[in-house]
Length: 321
Image (cartoon, rainbow, N blue to C red; front, side):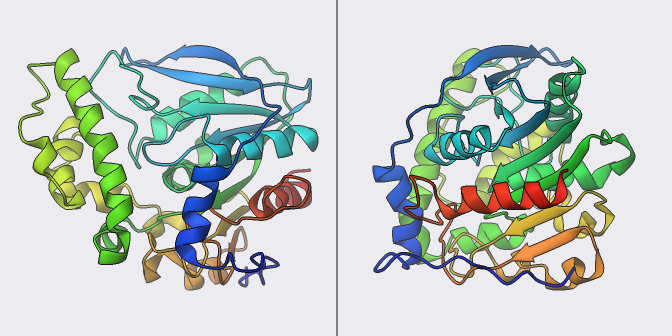
C-alpha cells in the first residue's frame, strides 16, 4: 500500500528525538492496569511469563515489548489500558531472561525467535474464547511479530487479522551501526548495563555454557552478538544472526494487514528501516513515518493517552473487524 500520511504532531517544545525517547521512560506513569500472571512452559524446557489484562472480550491483542524491556514498561501499560478501553483483552508476554527472571535454559528470546511468538499466540487462542486477534509490538517486539507473520504465513491462525509495530528495526545489520553513532552513547550504556547483568545471571545459572569473563568490556553490539547471541542460538556468527533475524527480506510474504510506524527522527533506526518499496508493493503492508516521535515515544497528552495508543486502536478498528 502507499505510505500512510501521519497525523502525529509533537506537543510544543517536545519534538526533539531524544526528548521523545527519554521523556516517557523518565516521567510517565500509567495507572489502572492490573495483570494476571501465568507461566507458559516451552518445548525446550524454558518458560515465558504471560501477563493478562482481561475484560471479557472475544478480541485478543498480543503485545510484545522491546529489547531488554518487560511487560511493565510504560509503553506496554499505556497500550494495554487503551486497548482494554476499546474492547480488547490483552496478553503481554515477557521475553526469556527479561525482567530480572532467571530461566531454565541459556537461550534468550532474540529477534528471530518466531517459535516463542507462535507459542504465545497459540496458547492465547487455545481456549477458543477469541474470534479475533491482533499483534502489537514495540521495537524488537515489532520485528519479532513481522518475522512471525512472514516466515511461515500458512501457520498464522486465521483469527489473527492485523498487526501494528512501532519503532521497528526491520534491518538489524544497519541498525547495529546506527546504535554505534555518538548520538546514541547514552542508550548504548543503558543497553550494555542490562546485557551485562543478564550475562552474569546466565553464567551463574549455566557456568559450563555461558562465560561472563570480560563482558563489561564489550561496547559494540557486533562483538556482543559474535560472543553471545550467535553461539547461544545456533547462528554462525553475529552477522549471520542479524541477517537471518531481520524481517526486511521477507516483508513481501506478509498476508495480514500490518502497520509499521517508524518516526523519521528515530536515532536507533537506519534508512533501511523505512521500507517504502516493499510496502508499496504489498497491499497488506502500511508504512507511516511521522516527522518526529523518537524511539517508542510519540508523546501526547490527550486523556492520558499517547498518540501511538490512539493510532493502534484506530488501525485495529479499521482492519481487524
